[in-house]
Structures are given as structure tokens and as C-alpha cells.
Amino acid sequence: KAFVDVVGFYQKYKNFQSSAWIADPGTGEFNYKTIDGGKAKTYGLEASVNVALIKQIEVFGNYAWLHSAFDSTNTDGLTQQYAGNRFALAPEHSFTVGFNGQVNLTKNLQLFVSPSYSYKTQIYFTDANTEGIDQPAYGLLNVTGGFRLAEPNLTLMVYGNNLLDEQYVTSGGNTGSMFG
Image (spheres, rainbow, N blue to C red):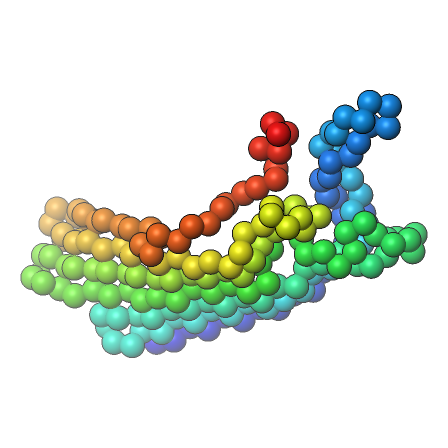
């Protein structure tokens, strides 16, 4: 058995909502505000495949390509502050590969394992694409495994995430920046 999914998309935005630090002209104090980021577009594709090699082993994979960026001008034709910048939290490429394996040890006991590796290219945490408030490309190796009992209906499992001890940041420049 094999399953394949492929999807493509194209979206255009105007008056795109973004967040920015804006200085108060009177006090010079910076405030985190929602602003009109102007025009933007995003397009890309995603493909997934799932193949049962044999009854006990199934391989899977997913790949996504994403282009999401602010246009060079806003709806009034003026140059945008974020012109050409990528959207926050939007990697250009990402993929996951892995397999699900299972073997019956007895009529009542099954052993299973499911390792996977996922990868994302660089992401920015703000629409301003501020260097230093970004995450370089990284990949994670995760494994789940365990035993299934038919009687009683019970599953015992263990899992390990980030087994290669990859150092990465999941967020930056958002709430924490309000506290300096």
C-alpha cells in the first residue's frame, strides 16, 4: 500500500497585521503594538508519502516548501518597512522522515518502534527578520517504542525526543522582549 498527498497554495494579503516596537514621540518609550504590515504573499507546496513495505514496516515522509514574504510596496504604493522580509516562524524548507515497525513476539505481545527525523531551515521570530532573534536550521531525532498486549488491552511505551541533543530555540523576541 502507498499513500501520496500533494498540495499547493497561493495567498495574497493586504493590510497584513504585524507586531513592532514603536517609540512614543513624546516620551521615547517603546511599546509593542500591532501595525499594518501592508501587502504580502505566501505560496508553496507540501508532499507526504506513506508506504507499507511489508506488513510489519511502514515508511513515511513529508516535505514542505514555503515562500512567505512582504511585498515591496503597500496598498498605497509606498515602500514597506518589511519589504522582502519572510514571515515570522516560517521556515523555507522542512521535512520529516521515519518508519513504523512492529513484530508479534507472541500471539498476545507485540513489539513496536517508530523513529523519525525532522528538519527545519532558519526561522525568524519577528516579521522584522532581526538577526540574533532567529533560529538557524536544525534537525531533531525522536524515537518511540514499546510493547502492546492484546489481553489486557494495554500499551507500554517509552519515547526519546531530541536524541542528538540539538540546541535550538522555540521562541524569541516576543513576550520576553517586553521584560528587557
